[in-house]
Length: 190
Image (cartoon, rainbow, N blue to C red; front, side, top):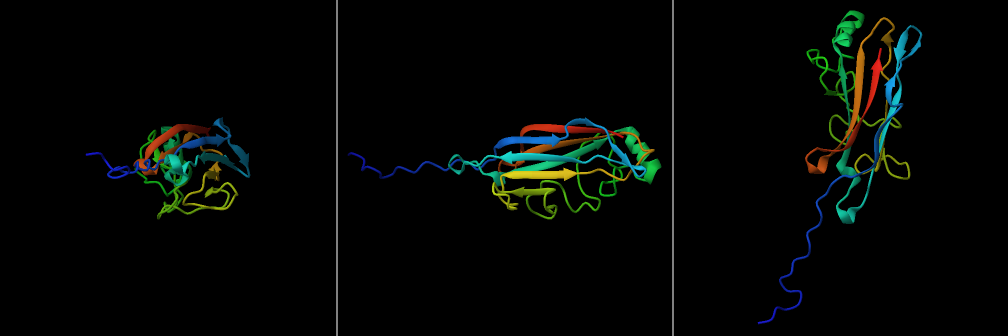
């Protein structure tokens, strides 16, 4: 018996949803950066960016990608932070027991916001400083292709010394948080 054309033939499955980087993640400036000193305190402003690809027919969706920024500080920074402002960490949003030389996701001083989160309780977008936009420039946290963030560790006492290292990474949240692309780094020797 001959098969009837089209009968019993399943349509091909849609490709699994995933993220793909078009560019980034990249810090500006990049690498080792010297602090600015003004008014008796130090600061280091920097930006970080990434662009996600969009190819829905291939299962590539920008909304699957998410930026995260991590930080670690050395033993000198931990000790000198305690002396300079009574903290073992860069600010009070971090657990006071977090050890030196160990990566931790960066956060604000109240641990209510973390860079690059698209949604959820730790997502607090900031225009021009922590947001996803579409190619036309409109904020689109859910599926924007372009991420731009900026940070400015500041009000650090001149007497403070030690090293803070920042790392920006990209994760594919549609594949259970798999890291995609390479990380970029910025190192601040206070």
